[in-house]
Structures are given as structure tokens and as C-alpha cells.
Image 1 (cartoon, rainbow, N blue to C red):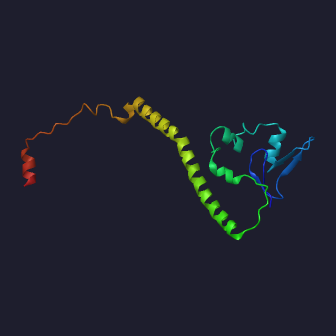
Image 2: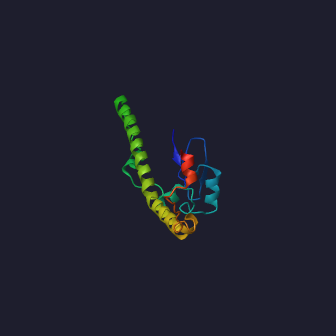
Image 3: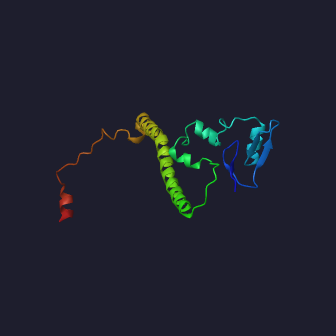
Length: 159
């Protein structure tokens, strides 16, 4: 089963799906859905359309360079089938997927960290500007003095 990538959005196209466009110079463009095909016909640049993988890669939203991506590369060498090698490969694929997911999570956290600091700073600035709304007016000045002398009525009620 041959899986190909969409020319516009880089998503995988399964057999029997998508649209294929062949230009006059025999260059083949494959599209996963009509949305990608229409954007291609409108001569839109995939690096400027926000929902594409090319946009996410150029703007630092996704990991683009990592050792785990080398395992995904297509190899056209025929290999002799060996059950042990296949077993080891499947185990390695699971480990690589786990490593990739943790690295992607770290990448996302690293990307969002400066924004959290910015949000915290803006919240502190907002509180500083509108501190009068948080502190009741005159609450610092007003103190209630309680006399230590008990009245005669209170002493009678206590007994």
C-alpha cells in the first residue's frame, strides 16, 4: 500500500483518495481533498496558509529537525524478509513514537513558556492600575476602638 503526501498540506493520502493533477511538463501534484486543490489553483503559497504543515514549520510551531524524522524517510531498497528483523523493527517503531511524542510535548512547552510570563506580567500590571477596585476606600484609615471597660449591663448578662 503506497501512501503519498498531499502537495499542498503535506497530509497523507491513502489509496483511492484525493485528486491528482498532471501539469504540461509531466509534473504530478497530488491533493488530499478539494480544499487543497482549490488553493493550489488559486496559486496560494502553502507557507502562508495557516492550516498547512509548511506554515507551521516555517513559523516554528512544529518540530522540523529531529533525529526521529529520519526513520520516516522513504527507502527504495528491497529487503529480504526476516521475521526477527521485522519484530525488532516494530518494537523500535513503538519506542521512536514514544520519544517523538515526548520531544513534541517539550517543544510545545518551550514555545508557550514566554507567553505564560507575558500573561502573568500583564495581569500584575492590570492589578497595579486598578488597585482602587480591590481595596475598599478608607479601609486602611478606619480602625474600630473597643473599650476595655465593660458596662454594667454586659456584666449582668454574663453572669
